[in-house]
Image (tube, rainbow, N blue to C red; front, side, top):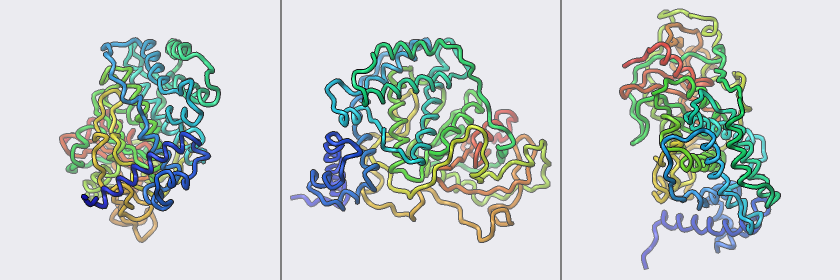
Length: 477
């Protein structure tokens, strides 16, 4: 008999736990499911379950990520151009296909629709859901904006559609048989005809520190990160993706990498919701219709580490090189200050302890293209269920900059010098190069010719880098 390796045994244990959890959640639902019963179903100990999953919530999310039969639907033969009304109806049809069937139990129906109702009722979870939904609305809006008649912004339309569809999802679980799916589909088409005043309101400049010019070699992880605008956002800052998208030049490749302080729960929630939305977009819109926007759910920590490796050690810019050009420069908040807010910011969530991400999922996604991440059956980077080899509270792959022995703002290697804006002005704000990742992370870099030519961190970082390079043309290699 062939002896299993430790990694193979852990993978077998994890698979057994997931199979048992599907039965338990389908029979009892999330609220009434018990870890002890799941362990008994799998002929394992309670400790074996917890060695693979931090708790019931992370286990439930892992089950949902594994349970997506409707994602495998055959690709449709889509026309190259789809009017916005037909596109809205097509997206609604794709969304409604996952709703529970007439014979499904309440618990089974929630599994089929991949519902997280009642799972994230705490305030950090609610805040994360709000930010994830804002990113969902942006991805849907970008696809709708390209449909004739072409519009500059259709975020409000996307928000209305998602409100209607999420409501239908909720009612399908609580009041089965209520509502007609054909009427819901036509209603989404009618929403596209409502004249909505939808203008982009950029963040106020007083709250956005200017980007810093630099010239650093870019050595991204294998197969990740080419030229363009790269923005790394924590789950409490996902709404800031639109700041970068709207400020970028039309032909800029934009990559939004999502990171979290708790990959097994908050990170898994983002992965679940965004992969579901992307599956609907691929079945509705032709590839590439949303423009050069790519969502990366796997590589954020390693990208942050690569940015740190490139920028750490660069000499600070001399404050005498330039003078402030407008009052907003002189009063800009510290780029790493998470307490400075501007209108539209959501309440930040508190960071949790980092746990290993769910292995085996293709999570680098492009809204209307084919998946660009690893195949679902690719092996994990470390044995499933093994504890992460990093200090509690940190995320694998990201190397946080060392904490100075003196208060922020006092002279040090990391806070010396001023930030010079790409428009030619500068501010006396000291630059804190903090590349740690978590729920509040916002780091942006512009890459041209294989080199980082501008960067910023803190709230509004993506907007600052995109605006500076678009308007001034600075930072050319």
